[in-house]
Image (tube, rainbow over all chains, first blue to last red; front, side, top):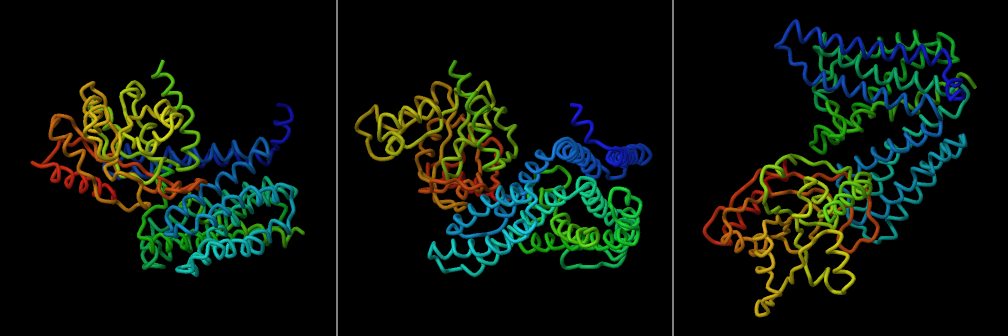
Length: 307
Length: 209
């Protein structure tokens, strides 16, 4: 127990306080808003807010106490994301073997990140799995539609495993846990800021064919607010002011890109949500879509600056 | 004792396997408590179907639910049939033509269970088909409902289980699965064929929701 408390330093405590203040602020806001204006349609926002509370507590439980638990939690997240992707994509029955390989890659990839093997973590999927998966498909011998499977299956691994495993890589560098908090918080807040700016000032659609609710106002407002938030949370990172502004700016943009990539995939499959796992949010993939693209971008920017 | 044992299996052990493998999601499960006796009419793609349906049943009713299984598949050896009966509470019926031997008449076996007040799980497709593609329903259940029109049935659509563990596959692969229960229905139609056609349409209609 003592050991566990020692690990919780003052930076993290400040972060946890900020996180719970934000959540309390949101809950209070919706409660008061609902009382003042009973006609307002807040039920979905309230469900979403409740899910945020649960996700925040789960996230803290998985990261604050023990790093081993964090790696297991990330692996579980990758597993659920991969299962969700395979369930919505229309793959062939012949692709089962390759899919099994994808699931087996999860523990291997997280083992590399856990050990802090940087090069192995970075090349295992884009080099070795990208050889193994097409070969597995070739071994089945069914060539009808094999081009699509060869392209799609490795891509699912990049989305569900490669991107997310950078959360584990972050944990493996010194001061990584604060960086992890910084990353997850600004990326998720970026989603919230884009939503709030878009709802309040949104007029000009940014990608009407992909995401009809997204606007230029939401995008620009969100990115700028996130950059400002990154500046205020600088104490969680070892970076300088100009570095952290640049990192936050690019990470926010990457978050937006991840969001619209998954949106366009859903649009092609004529789905609204990837599953019904998180009340108010949709599937797990709907929630972590920005994270899977933003994590590698963030990791490599930080790595470049603090090396 | 039997109830405790079955609940241990279906509320204790099976969810541990089912949850990671299928992330199983039930829609409208409250319909199962709306009637004491019912027949579940579901599409069939995998052995997982029965596990998923049994896990959804209310605790106190679990001994009264009998999945109807093919005796010529699960009853081929003594051990196979004992394991099937003990673990799933299954009602084994022969799938073909033994109407002369009364103890092996599938209709008599099913009607006996219904007379005792038990509920059935029936897959009218007869065997496991391709994932998410429905085959034509067999007429048998129509003949039974003509004799017992007061017993309600629940059309049920099961999605994706055929991808997790299709026919002839040995290694299961995780996919998100969904079980959609329809509302309680009573038999509609004058002939077995009509009843069964209506059922097929009702199950098929759940596909989109």
